[in-house]
Length: 255
Ligand SMILES: C[S@@+](CC[C@H](N)C(=O)[O-])C[C@H]1O[C@@H](n2cnc3c(N)ncnc32)[C@H](O)[C@@H]1O
Image (cartoon, rainbow, N blue to C red; front, side, top):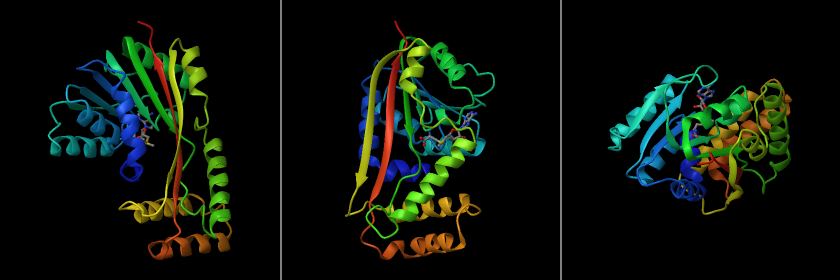
């Protein structure tokens, strides 16, 4: 799903990678926090041929995939992986010109502590780019499934809140409180309409299946059956759209 995110929402992704590139010197050292399968790491390495990147994640399997992909793309000598739980003691990963955290800050237990650690990881004048999302993308906005999708999103948001995820944080205020200068802040409202990019249906299927699994004991039997029907009929529909939001903040450690 992480890979599909970057692939299907590619216009937004290209723009945000370009923005990141504009923040750094010519041969930057970049740390990708909670790098996952490496969508950010690999895109940044391609966009910035002089960059050296350190991808950090707690999940060994994701890092294995990222490493394989870096080697396959001829980027193996510029990308290293570090396995670490960022809620614990941080490994030696600085000094960095850019720390990039895409959809990972909300997973970490203590935002203030994390921001202090990022500050210490950056060289003076370095930038921290945070991207966050408000949930899964939506696909059924213009269909008869809009109300059900809305209900699923409300329920998923409740679950995240109960699980203590830091979604919906005001990262701009948090950056300033941690001593960063707030250099940029932008919301991307992403809407993809037909003709849909390749893999859009697969993206919708995986997202709705995952929604169904997560909400299996929170939706009624009728609602679950309706979700199953949407998943099964997705390939035949011509009324799908993809909508998602991404919020980006840039904090600068004062020089
Ligand atoms: C939603 S994924 C985002 C992945 C990637 N940044 C992207 O945009 O595609 C969140 C990532 O954060 C990682 N993560 C969550 N908690 C973590 C922790 N305590 N320490 C390190 N990584 C963590 C997960 O393993 C996962 O790869």
